[in-house]
Amino acid sequence: MQKKLTITVDEQVYQGLHRVIGRRRISRFIESLVRPHVIREDLSAAYRAMAQDEEREAEALEWAESTVTDVGDETR
Image (tube, rainbow, N blue to C red; front, side, top):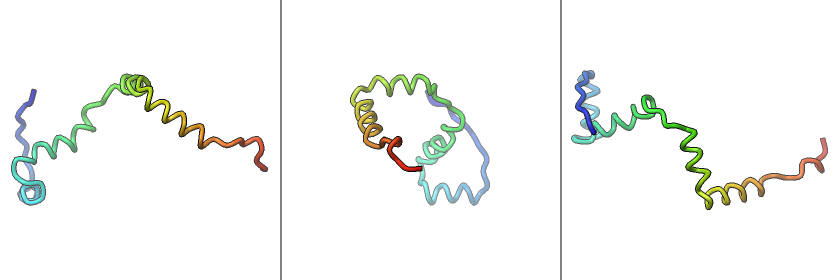
């Protein structure tokens, strides 16, 4: 559900938004900037969802295994 919000900005900012972002796109632009600062996703749920993706996990494991070297054989 969307809510209407009235904000006040400097006239130059307003004109710049219209010039750069364009009419009818300003709300979406502002929301995309603000959203990460006010809506915190549940990281635990996101990590669980990622872990359930077996193909992604297999690729991640393959990458991790290919980047690990036997550090026991390296000189100090």
